Amino acid sequence: MTQRTLEQRQQDARHKLETEDDVWLASADSDGNPALVPFSLAWDGERIILATDGKNTTAKNLTGNPKAKLFVGDSRDVVLVSATAQVFAQAEAPAGALDLFAERTGWDPRGSARAGW
Image (cartoon, rainbow, N blue to C red; front, side, top):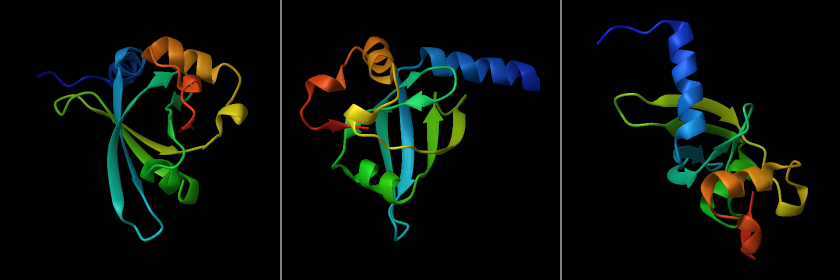
């Protein structure tokens, strides 16, 4: 396999963020206990948008410790993103984020009484 240039790797990473449906998110609680969970994703060109129940382990982890790792793609060509999460209740989500997420993933978390950000 030919090694890609930095420019090509960046272009390929953006393409994955635009076209992949799923992402694995790694987080840890305050004791350092890890969790690795799959999510549907939407990307707005600057941030990865995920939706989940505000009471689940990942939401709790990211509220207490916003450092996360995200993995997009398969094991032979994965994009690894080191991130600092921002957790929002639905009513506080950035303008357009819910619409983009629903359009991109086919699931609108606003229809779920338990969904959170």
